[in-house]
Image (tube, rainbow, N blue to C red):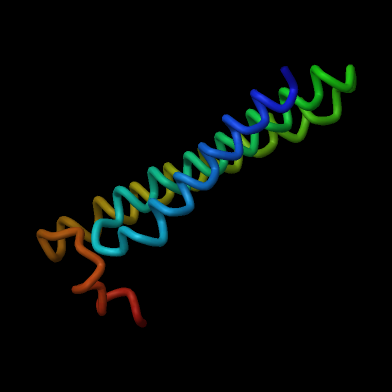
Length: 99
């Protein structure tokens, strides 16, 4: 049972990594793929914590989820401001962010 669930979480992790690598045009899909990476890591830590009867994995999962929520809110706020200025969210035209 441990290996079956572990393979599901690893599959979710690699699907989200491929989503980030293969789709480099839309920033929203890249942010969602990054959230899926954080979520799969959290699932893996929680499941390992339950399997090993240890609470440290659950504590780390909560920390990862809070960082993911902060990253998501800041990323979406930057994206909304960028969309108001440029009226597009494609990465090809993001020379405004260079500084």
